[in-house]
Length: 148
Image (cartoon, rainbow, N blue to C red; front, top):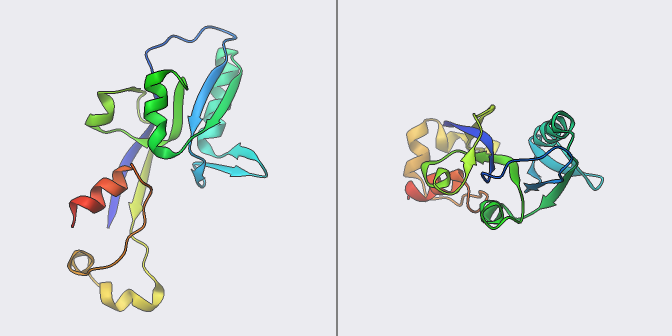
Protein backbone atom coordinates (compact mmCIF):
# COMPACT_ATOMS: atom_id res chain seq x y z
CA UNK A 1 0.00 0.00 0.00
CA UNK A 2 1.80 3.10 -1.19
CA UNK A 3 0.44 6.64 -1.25
CA UNK A 4 2.25 9.47 -2.94
CA UNK A 5 2.10 12.92 -1.42
CA UNK A 6 3.63 16.06 -2.83
CA UNK A 7 5.70 17.89 -0.28
CA UNK A 8 6.21 21.59 -0.62
CA UNK A 9 6.90 24.57 1.49
CA UNK A 10 4.01 26.71 2.56
CA UNK A 11 4.23 30.42 3.14
CA UNK A 12 2.29 33.56 3.70
CA UNK A 13 1.95 36.04 0.84
CA UNK A 14 4.62 38.26 2.39
CA UNK A 15 7.46 39.25 0.04
CA UNK A 16 10.98 38.65 1.28
CA UNK A 17 13.46 41.50 1.08
CA UNK A 18 17.19 40.96 0.59
CA UNK A 19 18.91 40.53 3.94
CA UNK A 20 15.63 40.05 5.83
CA UNK A 21 15.58 37.21 8.38
CA UNK A 22 13.50 34.23 7.22
CA UNK A 23 11.88 32.29 10.07
CA UNK A 24 11.35 28.74 8.86
CA UNK A 25 8.91 26.53 10.75
CA UNK A 26 10.00 22.90 11.05
CA UNK A 27 8.92 19.77 12.87
CA UNK A 28 12.27 17.95 12.77
CA UNK A 29 11.13 14.37 13.20
CA UNK A 30 11.08 13.02 9.65
CA UNK A 31 14.49 11.57 8.73
CA UNK A 32 15.92 12.16 6.09
CA UNK A 33 13.58 15.01 5.13
CA UNK A 34 13.90 17.18 8.25
CA UNK A 35 15.47 16.05 11.50
CA UNK A 36 17.77 17.09 14.30
CA UNK A 37 21.27 15.68 14.75
CA UNK A 38 23.62 16.83 17.50
CA UNK A 39 21.37 19.82 18.12
CA UNK A 40 21.43 20.92 14.45
CA UNK A 41 18.50 20.90 12.00
CA UNK A 42 19.45 18.63 9.07
CA UNK A 43 17.94 16.95 6.04
CA UNK A 44 16.65 17.70 2.56
CA UNK A 45 14.40 20.54 3.73
CA UNK A 46 17.25 22.10 5.76
CA UNK A 47 19.52 21.93 2.71
CA UNK A 48 16.83 23.63 0.61
CA UNK A 49 16.37 26.30 3.29
CA UNK A 50 20.10 27.02 3.22
CA UNK A 51 20.01 27.21 -0.59
CA UNK A 52 17.14 29.73 -0.39
CA UNK A 53 19.12 31.70 2.20
CA UNK A 54 22.11 31.89 -0.15
CA UNK A 55 20.03 32.85 -3.21
CA UNK A 56 18.07 35.56 -1.37
CA UNK A 57 21.04 36.72 0.69
CA UNK A 58 18.74 36.36 3.69
CA UNK A 59 19.69 34.79 7.02
CA UNK A 60 17.45 31.97 8.27
CA UNK A 61 16.24 30.86 11.66
CA UNK A 62 14.70 27.43 12.12
CA UNK A 63 11.71 27.55 14.48
CA UNK A 64 10.87 24.12 15.89
CA UNK A 65 7.15 23.50 16.26
CA UNK A 66 4.80 20.55 16.73
CA UNK A 67 3.46 19.51 13.31
CA UNK A 68 -0.09 20.69 14.08
CA UNK A 69 1.23 24.20 14.85
CA UNK A 70 3.09 24.74 11.55
CA UNK A 71 0.27 26.23 9.47
CA UNK A 72 -1.24 28.25 12.34
CA UNK A 73 2.19 29.86 12.85
CA UNK A 74 2.35 30.87 9.17
CA UNK A 75 -1.14 32.34 9.48
CA UNK A 76 -0.25 34.41 12.56
CA UNK A 77 3.19 35.48 11.32
CA UNK A 78 5.11 33.38 13.84
CA UNK A 79 7.07 31.91 10.91
CA UNK A 80 7.46 33.03 7.31
CA UNK A 81 7.80 29.61 5.67
CA UNK A 82 7.11 25.99 6.61
CA UNK A 83 9.59 23.41 5.36
CA UNK A 84 8.63 20.15 6.98
CA UNK A 85 7.38 17.67 4.34
CA UNK A 86 3.97 19.30 4.34
CA UNK A 87 1.58 17.60 1.92
CA UNK A 88 -0.47 19.81 -0.37
CA UNK A 89 -4.21 19.45 0.30
CA UNK A 90 -7.21 21.52 -0.76
CA UNK A 91 -7.96 22.40 2.87
CA UNK A 92 -4.39 23.58 3.48
CA UNK A 93 -4.34 25.57 0.22
CA UNK A 94 -7.20 27.67 1.60
CA UNK A 95 -4.94 28.78 4.47
CA UNK A 96 -1.45 29.07 2.95
CA UNK A 97 0.26 29.31 -0.42
CA UNK A 98 2.34 26.33 -1.57
CA UNK A 99 5.26 26.43 -3.96
CA UNK A 100 5.33 23.99 -6.86
CA UNK A 101 5.87 20.54 -5.27
CA UNK A 102 9.54 19.61 -5.37
CA UNK A 103 9.39 16.20 -3.75
CA UNK A 104 7.16 13.14 -3.88
CA UNK A 105 7.12 10.96 -0.80
CA UNK A 106 5.69 7.44 -0.72
CA UNK A 107 4.02 6.28 2.47
CA UNK A 108 3.58 2.63 3.27
CA UNK A 109 2.47 0.34 6.03
CA UNK A 110 5.25 -1.27 8.06
CA UNK A 111 4.40 -4.65 9.52
CA UNK A 112 6.36 -6.83 11.95
CA UNK A 113 8.13 -9.63 10.09
CA UNK A 114 6.47 -12.15 12.41
CA UNK A 115 3.03 -11.00 11.20
CA UNK A 116 3.53 -10.87 7.44
CA UNK A 117 1.39 -14.00 7.01
CA UNK A 118 -1.63 -12.06 8.30
CA UNK A 119 -1.22 -9.42 5.61
CA UNK A 120 -0.29 -11.36 2.47
CA UNK A 121 -2.66 -9.18 0.42
CA UNK A 122 -3.38 -5.43 0.65
CA UNK A 123 -7.10 -5.89 1.35
CA UNK A 124 -6.23 -7.87 4.50
CA UNK A 125 -4.87 -4.69 6.07
CA UNK A 126 -8.33 -3.11 5.81
CA UNK A 127 -10.03 -6.23 7.17
CA UNK A 128 -7.91 -6.44 10.33
CA UNK A 129 -8.25 -4.46 13.54
CA UNK A 130 -4.85 -3.19 14.68
CA UNK A 131 -3.20 -0.17 16.23
CA UNK A 132 -1.71 2.41 13.90
CA UNK A 133 0.83 5.12 14.68
CA UNK A 134 1.08 8.28 12.62
CA UNK A 135 1.90 11.96 13.11
CA UNK A 136 -1.08 13.98 14.39
CA UNK A 137 -2.44 16.46 11.87
CA UNK A 138 -0.89 14.79 8.80
CA UNK A 139 -2.52 13.48 5.65
CA UNK A 140 -1.48 9.99 6.84
CA UNK A 141 -3.63 10.47 9.96
CA UNK A 142 -6.56 11.63 7.84
CA UNK A 143 -6.18 8.64 5.53
CA UNK A 144 -6.13 6.19 8.45
CA UNK A 145 -9.18 7.79 10.10
CA UNK A 146 -11.10 7.53 6.81
CA UNK A 147 -10.34 3.79 6.62
CA UNK A 148 -12.05 2.92 9.90
